Image (cartoon, rainbow over all chains, first blue to last red; front, side, top):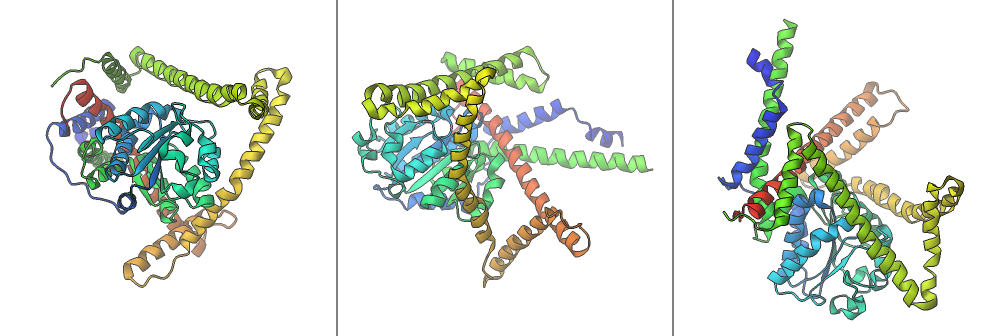
Length: 275
Length: 210
């Protein structure tokens, strides 16, 4: 009975230690747990997979370092897919200027890997003040809204942006966000301009985004590290997301066990007190 | 294993471990890491904002585009009016700038937000009676869940009888929603830990993980 009572009051540091072990060990001993593909991730993949080299995907990296672990694997996976399909990629940080330091080096690295030319195959616009106003402005005139890229080159001088007038010339907006930025894209770009939008969001927010997905306001959704892992599986390029998911699964098993043991302890103490 | 020789990776590892010392208890290492993080984040933001916004989007066009650039003086003055809040004597000036900002913002947002968050969500619950058994069940589930949830938040009638029963069903739907959110939250927090562990193993210790 004392043992059961102790289950209810396990020192939090022991819990942290066990969780840490559950997270670290899978990196050394792989079990190869399967990653199943959810329809919301598959629909983003299918949409991008159906694009042609004349299409352009606009990716907004609206996140900061706190959620880098969840969203950067998504960024890598989507950019990889676009580059593999020779789809043009324009990256910006519409809502979060801290995202500049996160997405710019990744974009450059991936472009080098796929031998893509800046200004022709991809471009980086960085951040500009305005947020929602930028989204609305892009619907009227893409070039007047952004004017220059992050490095000061005028958009009219780059082949990739020269012919982009507005959302009519952007096949998909993929918003990667650790906040509610995807809602602004829905409100200002989807409602007014019927722009196709895909969201890559942190797991904390994923449950909140399903109504928008069900209403058809989003073409698809990547939720947390799992969303990134699924996309990596689809493009057959397992990377940070896929490696992390095994650790994720083991940590979840540990947490489930703690919840069960905690409840057993709780009911044991309750029963004892009744007697 | 090939340890990193990059000093910045070592610094990042130091701060990562310093933050995690909080799990044991609050301590000066954690406080130091916390302060540095906040300071750097703010510093980075201010410098980027200054360069990309004030210099690139205001000062450069103002000084190079002649009369067209002069239009920018109007929003600049309104921006300065916002700052007058810090001087109590001139604080009233900020109200005009705020009034413009709130008025324009609401005007831009309200019609679209109503469309996106209310009307289109309503359309999404007006579902056809699907021919397939599974489709019918899914659609029915969405309709019942929406109605029961709305009834739970209807407080002008006491939750008793049939009305109370439906409100109770609403609670169950809400609980499932909260459970899903909690599960996702656990997943999110673990993802952040996994991100740091991956950084230490791959970037710091040089292990080949994939």
